[in-house]
Image (cartoon, rainbow, N blue to C red; front, side):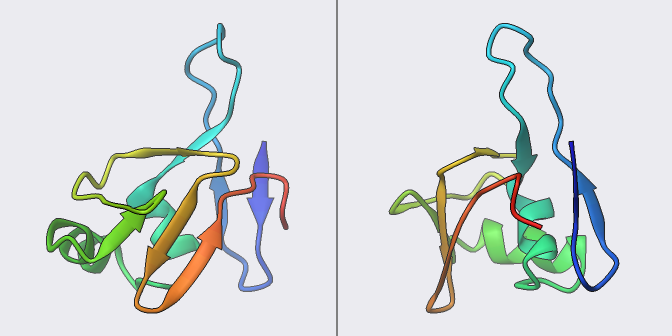
Length: 86
């Protein structure tokens, strides 16, 4: 499943566990996707400094797998993960 944005950025939601068969996106990729970080390096620093919350808990793992319905908060902004949103 691919998600396309108006800014011509495409991220593929991966399916790694056939038992779950649930797409996910990694936290650092998600921050770039929503425009909260310009680069992967910037996303890494933001996450490692504990500035991002996932489901109301501080998250410092940039590889955290986000799935549909997860809530991400950063810098007074909030997003709900939805792989079908385009």
